[in-house]
Length: 146
Ligand code: CMP
Image 1 (tube, rainbow, N blue to C red):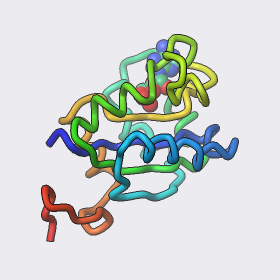
Image 2 (image 1 turned 90 degrees about the horizontal axis):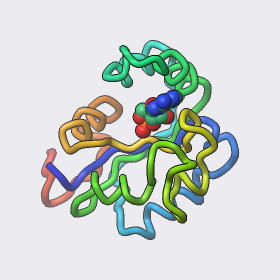
Image 3 (image 1 turned 90 degrees about the vertical axis):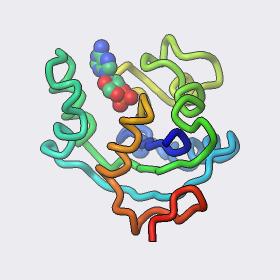
């Protein structure tokens, strides 16, 4: 399903008080919030969430950072949601992100880059299921869950 994606605002951006501004940018770009929650992942959960990166040299730092404080998680709906959100947040490294993108505006380093977003339709569905039960997501005509 290409019309849903998963994003979360990372610990430092939440701590800096940027959650509201980032959510406003996302909504203004036409995404509908169909689920939201603020949680703090423990290290085990962060390692499970990012397990696709477990062989990378940055895995330990990434998972320690992701579990270092609360994150604000959103499930979003829009036509072409995955691709459009990736464009809106910009490149992984804030220094390389285009002007006006969320990572350019609020990211600090490649690790502390402000926001995560699913990178494919397949991963979006996995990541949505990782954080949300079907009862925590708004019903829509294209996702009749009840
Ligand atoms: P995210 O979209 O959450 O998905 C994986 C994360 O790994 C990515 O954002 C970055 O924060 C982090 N990451 C990717 N490449 C590197 C790197 N070279 N060094 C440190 N962190 C990285």
